[in-house]
Length: 330
Ligand SMILES: [Ca+2]
Image (tube, rainbow, N blue to C red; front, side):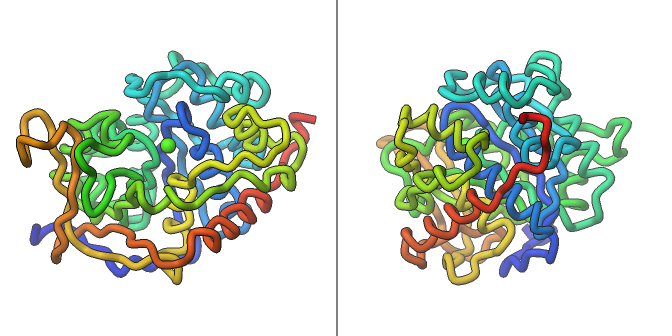
């Protein structure tokens, strides 16, 4: 671990350069997270280097790209994994894609997430990029295992070590998941295990418990009438009143990426253990079970501090702050 880069306490840059890695598929909080990220980018507090999808489920690229374009970021690269660890059954993806993402390719013909990751990282400043994963860990796994290519002579681990400041992962349940695993870990437990043991920079884990008590999206009637994220929450909650609220696992992760722990959370350093079929922590544990080992490791996890409703209010305001920056959908 001596050669590993440690980042805590994490102090965000004035403008945080972010690669967002999202499943943008089963759950709707990925759309809320993208709205929150775009609100920061519109303010000049974040720069969206790329958005990549971890679940090749049909039209994730059109959905992600369409939301980017609506908020004024049509040129942000969008890539997609060749795999689909999720069910691929989204209540909103195809509708958002159809309405907002016509200029983007379908998932089968889109650029690979790996290529986008490597291209964007190779041209980034050293030690600057914040990778934020709010879905399965297959893309990060593929990146770490990648070899040199036309974008960089470095292999994946060397490239991440040189360019990445911090990986933030919404995943796991802490201090332990019992007896089963958390959703994002379960989607690709072998990828998660590989990332835990091979990521050369610090990982900040935002566990299931962080977003589970924070409900957002229920103020979306204050968003613009044609906002794609408002529509996604309508479709997901099958709610014509606009009052449906969803847990905020992915949105809180963006809040941390741009603002740091602040008054929102405490940070506890340590490391994660993940049980795969090959690495049994205990005979009672199901695969993908995880637990937290507190200590002086390079990684850390968030620990709840601020009242959930206060954070919900901040995130809801962020969703409303994100504004349409194009006339292309009018
Ligand atoms: Ca997600």
